[in-house]
Image (cartoon, rainbow, N blue to C red; front, side, top):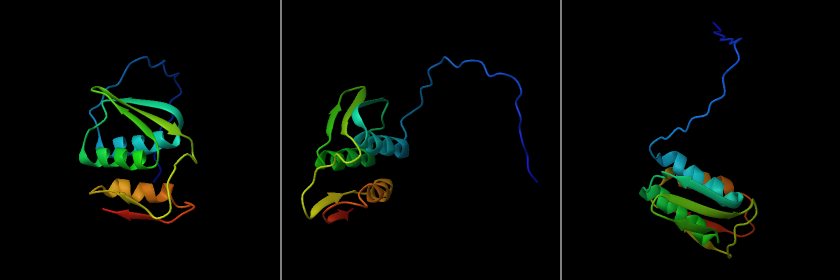
Length: 118
């Protein structure tokens, strides 16, 4: 049984700010996506959990600059192919399953072997 909702009314412009509490999964994803973007990305209200801090350590190991202030985090990404690493690099996902799974997808075509522990 299909349920289809069709709204024929025009939706009014949305000009509000939504503020949500920090979320571990979204914060880890933001760190990784920002490291792949070219230039500055800034997040306010980033969750400062062990998993998120582990993700920040990993991207720093790949040469990504991170500026962590009191109320925001700024990541300066080097673009899609901007990670810098040496042969036999070891990265530690610590206890973050999200980080471990996502970083493997990012590093799938790495030039050199990279060992993931955690």
